[in-house]
Amino acid sequence: MNEHPWRRALVTGGAGFVGSHLCARLAGAGTEVVCLDNLSTGSRANVAELERYRGFRFVRADATDPAALAALPGRFDLVLHFACPASPADYLRLPLETLEVGSAGTRNALERARADGARFVLASTSEVYGDPLEHPQRETYWGNVNPIGPRSVYDESKRYAEALVTAHRQVHGTDTAIVRIFNTYGPRMRTGDGRAVPTFVAQALDGVPLTVAGDGSQTRSLCYVDDTVTGVLALAGSRETGPVNIGGGEEITMLELARRIIALTGSASRIRFVDRPVDDPARRRPDTRLARERLGWRPRTGWSEGLERTVGWFSRSVAA
Image (cartoon, rainbow, N blue to C red; front, side, top):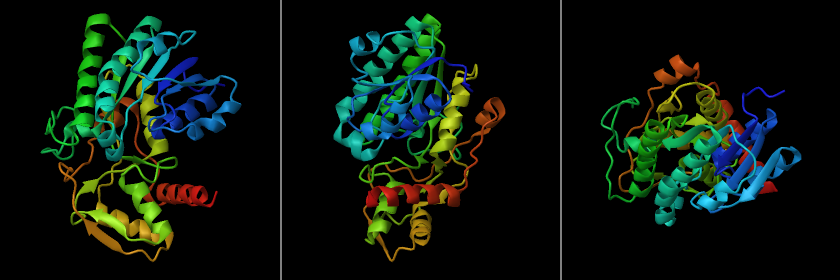
């Protein structure tokens, strides 16, 4: 029995980290899922096990191609736009593609949702707040973003996408929502994508030094991927337009995160400090009051449980 109200869902970027978990949750609940991904950063292996669901279909295509989305057969009642390089290593390698998927890709996904009368959810990001001067960050905060800095291709891609979604709703009445996802971790992250958790876990398992940027005092509030997916689908199933923050409640320094991962893995690795990236935010923690009050959502996976699952997945992947 389908626990969600959707018969068919389109997930752009569905072979990526968060996208693949969304596909799995929806397919497992009985929703027919079309996973569209160009595999520039995603992996077919992330959704290979979903082939057992009769209603699951993988389509290798680019969300920036309007013909690709328009040609998908049938009608969708949910469109989740998650196509976009999301890690610094990826969007620095693919700067123009990142801007294009936030602009043309968002427009194409919106037009498909409008044509089908579907609910549309944009995966935005805590990066729209930049290096925040407000702490914790509320949805009403406009942000402190460097529009020409090295991270700007991702930050501005998402900020433009939010503006486009808002305008599309106002002009066409498209049923849209915006979710601002804070740092998420869990199985299926790539070791080389530059984000802290997979980098630290891979280094700890290899017994090499964990590379902590700067003095490690910068903070993040991490959320386990299952909780993030629950929040996204809660927003999708609501009448809220957003933006709504979805993220972890416990703020942790990168130095403490590295130490926890060393302890959890039993690694003999030490910590090595490296230069801190330009425009790396000093503090980041979401105000999730809106998600709690409007969606009844809060993260439920504790640090030890989430990190144990993540480390276990990476350990099995290395051994395979």
